[in-house]
Image (cartoon, rainbow, N blue to C red; front, side, top):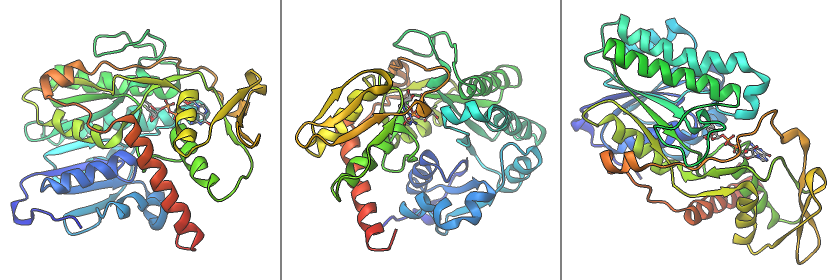
Length: 359
Ligand code: G4F
């Protein structure tokens, strides 16, 4: 049960993309700090209340200090009118088309949401003469680094290798440009991969943990995956939303990397997830013919499907978050093992609820 500080409300926040993993955790975090929170959700999430607002329900966000506004950051009129009516002190722009592979299929939509979205927010704040009172957080991404060698930090070059990465890089530069040219208080959080029980199931970590949790109910068909060699720096979303808020409380607006500082390949993640429930994978074959086999039973647990390969892959992300540690005193508190445990535990609960017809 969460308690709000009620009469002590001092700040108002607007979170775009509030129905996503980070949006839901951030809303919960800010409510616990005594904020009044306004959340922007797209119409499809709003009407499909049961699924679309699932995360907000799980975290008990829906309540007297939280209001939903439906709209879209890519609609300049809509976002300006929401900013005008809610008069936020802090805007967290988390709305995104966030799936890298999907961005290859719908590059223009990625650009509309990820680049035009922040432009619309910046212009709205400027045209409404709200520069003096509003702080803006832009959700930038480690995907912007693309092919540059690891480890990456705020000084690294950026050579994105997906439409998603390019659109996020445009958003990053727009935020920086409005800060430098118009004096808007805007910071970029350059976040490396961050996972949690609320991660979408089409991202590789949750796809794997869900499959592993389902295995307890009997073996079905193998899990299909793409490139197992990519290396990612996987942190926990709950630590990262705290970091977003810390950036917004800093004296000066600036850009910060948030990362765990430890990287694993997708293959190593798969091994760790299976072994946490006692399965040992033996990898046999290579390339598209490679199989992950249960060492004990011989059942094929993992196979490779070309459909999950991307036209261009980002090979190695490893973040250096020294700047956030030095200036904001931010450091991650949830380690990889705990994150993995929490994800699998959550999936087990959801599967058993679904089995009871409550899912
Ligand atoms: O889980 P992913 O889809 O995350 P990705 O592409 O790294 O992007 C995530 O992190 C970014 C930060 O760096 C965010 F900006 C972005 O919004 C998102 O949150 O894929 C991770 C890796 C990739 O190399 C992918 O090729 O896993 C590989 N992979 C292998 N098989 C797969 C699969 N990815 C997915 N989604 N599904 C697979 O079956």
